[in-house]
Length: 344
Ligand SMILES: NC(=O)c1ccc[n+]([C@@H]2O[C@H](COP(=O)([O-])OP(=O)(O)OC[C@H]3O[C@@H](n4cnc5c(N)ncnc54)[C@H](O)[C@@H]3O)[C@@H](O)[C@H]2O)c1
Image (cartoon, rainbow, N blue to C red; front, side, top):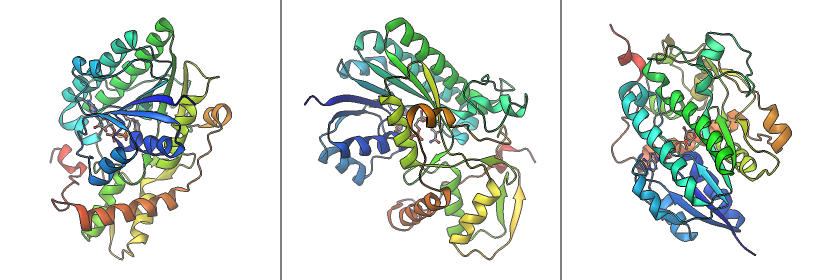
């Protein structure tokens, strides 16, 4: 039987590598990862999984268009996951977000002109709705068909969302012109082990381990929904492999909308925290409420998230505790906090 030939640009990342693990476990895929491991996520476990499962690795910076010559042609599926992410990055080097993400998108699209790929999936974000919900009051849970909108356009935080809007438009348009089957995924807060260190949950763990007291709850009244990585990765594969959907946009996320304060206190419970909590402002530009309407993915893809956020949270906390206590080379110094982005 012919194996399904799959390329994941950004396949060494958090979501990409979770997809790789699922596909490798199924056995009937010929997998290539293209990634520069910009977040230093090339740990021993990751690299030995790649070597042990006959996965091809092309380790290059794909903002350079010449690197695409190292890829083959005729992939069945191309997952486009590579991106520069992270709230801190948007605030500290927004020009790099624009450069890296635009180059990755443009180079991928131009490569697709000659690459003879059948199915393409581009990964976008619910950040594209920041002003849709906050300024125009569109409904939450938010369905895919609402307008994408950020405001103010010059805010560095929104550089990331703006590049994702370019990507959505670019992939859908090239898909129609070149005739590949294109899907867009808009994720909302996928979380789990190995998600990196610039996210809320690793930050919480780091600060509880550090016995922060009083414990700052940044933006506690804001809401999000948290989808565990196993569900997020499977939903992405379901979208990629669904032949009825073409030119479709899907939300992959969880339905339960919780406050950041609930998330913090649930994490505190794990640590038997008995100190004080105090409220503090979160990162500038942070949207007040966010929760995806996932009914389209449920109906068309059979997407059905299984892992309750509290269960996923414990798994994630335990992975990070282990990392901080046994693997971290440089001690805990990942959390910088939103305070520095406000003038005194
Ligand atoms: N995790 C989430 O909740 C979430 C939410 C919204 C959107 N997304 C999107 O989903 C995709 C995957 O996200 P993730 O959480 O796995 O992030 P991630 O940072 O773990 O994965 C991105 C991958 O892209 C790679 N990459 C970056 N620049 C590269 C370059 N120049 N050349 C080659 N590879 C490069 C990184 O090394 C990394 O492995 C991203 O496009 C992200 O914007 C994720």
